[in-house]
Length: 220
Image (tube, rainbow, N blue to C red; front, top):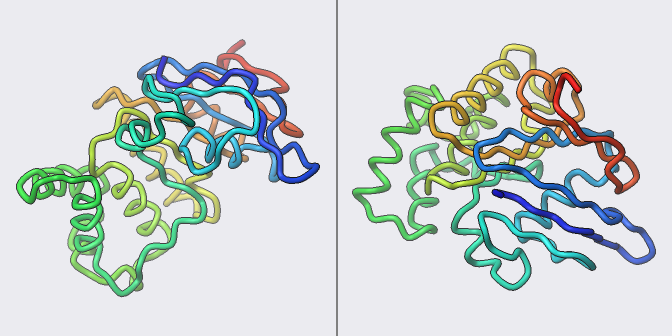
């Protein structure tokens, strides 16, 4: 399994933001995690990305425990999260090269990945421009590219199309599909939009008040 969570709880004081969630995501699957604001989607995603420790329960991502082997997990995942704040004074290329250095890629490997990502995210010459000139959709695609520089096994996308217009949203959907079909990448997608989950996901889990309310394939 690419992702396994068993009875995961995450509390903030007296609030149980995640309340005993168990789920499994197979390698190469797109798993849609659906729910309203405040349901616990982003909190669980941050636990799985090792940004928050579980209060109770256990989780493994890419074969490693998120608590005791967090470093191994981080090397194998990519994450495009809601609170990403790219440096608007840098160009897209500068940010991608810096991300490559963070992950210990050689200059040659970084440039190879940049060449592949240019085609994948389809920003074109804008990668040479400062991020402050980007539209919301372009920033979303750059954030996706930053999550992919090191060729992760598992990609976490936390509401990647929130605030985007219909055209930009469709573009992101196309990129997610291509990552899954061409690279076999496992995708954990949180969303508020039923249409998005229905369009992209192989299976959907619905979370409400920190608990899984339902889970199944799109046609079940």
